[in-house]
Image (cartoon, rainbow, N blue to C red; front, side, top):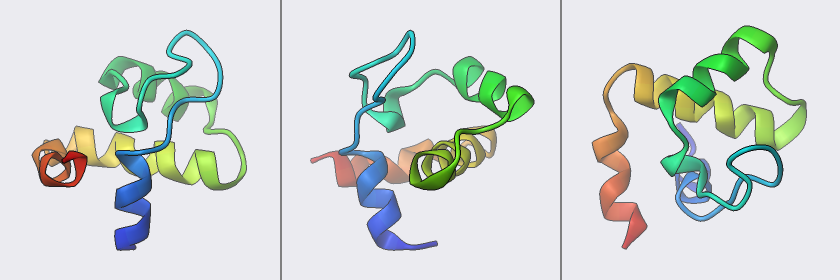
Length: 69
């Protein structure tokens, strides 16, 4: 895992949709699940959302807490 990608998960905000403006790391799991079923957006955002989905799916979101500070 790229440490820079983890840092982006705690600093980048969702650019569109129901959760526009929310940090990617704070998106609810059901929203990420929906993306996994419908298809993640292309490019960097899609990669970050997919990564966040895998982190939440495996119960590893606590690893991002120190990065939020």
